[in-house]
Image (tube, rainbow, N blue to C red; front, top):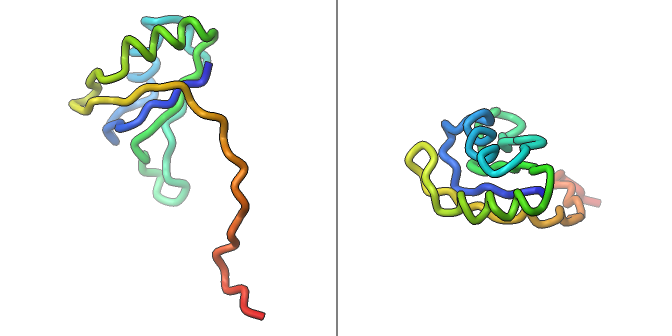
Length: 93
């Protein structure tokens, strides 16, 4: 089960998240999302748990708790949407 964690303090590390979530079951992976240019954390992350039951327990147990003095929001991650690329360049004809 893939879990979204929001409202993370920028100082939170992947190992801190792994430690918090492994209390509820096996953690497959942890990924704190960072800005691709600056490397600065964006304040959210994803944790993948080995099964849905453990994921549901982790969501119930961790949503609203505090890590590094910030109350985190924890819920099931939604599938990524396919958004059209907008180019962003100077496309004048």
